[in-house]
Image 1: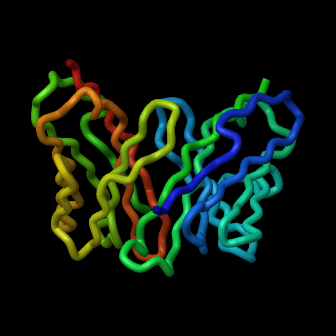
Image 2 (image 1 turned 180 degrees about the vertical axis):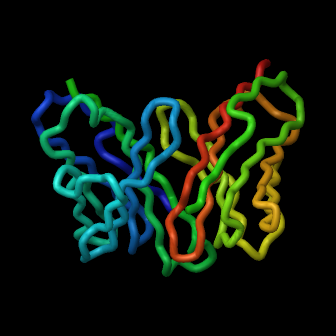
Image 3 (image 1 turned 30 degrees about the vertical axis):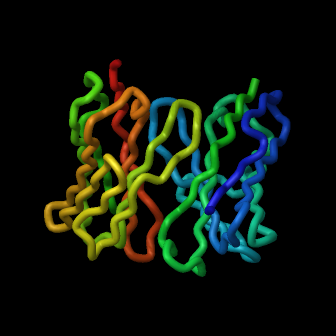
Amino acid sequence: GAVVSQHPSWVICKSGTSVKIECRSLDFQATTMFWYRQFPKQSLMLMATSNEGSKATYEQGVEKDKFLINHASLTLSTLTVTSAHPEDSSFYICSARDFRTSGRPDEQFFGPGTRLTVL
Amino acid sequence: KQEVTQIPAALSVPEGENLVLNCSFTDSAIYNLQWFRQDPGKGLTSLLLIQSSQREQTSGRLNASLDKSSGRSTLYIAASQPGDSATYLCAVRNYGQNFVFGPGTRLSVLP
């Protein structure tokens, strides 16, 4: 149980284009989803927190107009990198938390990540 | 602001050794602490979650301890195997806050 998937697993795009990454909780309802970015040999940095049905909360320094987050349902959140540039190339990881799941309400479950390369 | 550090940054050991990975955090008023494993180019796999009221958690060959007063957690791996090679991340959550991740320890277990 508690599986989080991401799609695509990798994507290569040209500078200036927009890329959408999907994050799904497969066997539970995720009231809260998180988006992280990880640069090579560095740890995860939280970009934003999204709660189903409401606007995402962005961390300081993360441009909300560049990284659009939509959490329209309890099983799906999307991150759209708009007008991507080479410096946006990174590993993007989502995670999900379900406060209502008994037994493991405080754990976060992570997706496998999406590697974005912007040429 | 919570800060998390991990020592050592990298570790290489022969197969079969018992080893200890360390995690330190600056704000001891934590809600919980979680250890993860990350294989190269992959996402995170949860290993152990320790609530603030707990002192340790065990799963198979893994044992994680928590000492809130000193701001430390250790991950003990018994009888290490080459399949244990990965980066191990410690993440700390304070009340009402999100996870803060440490930089990780890259472990290589040599056959």
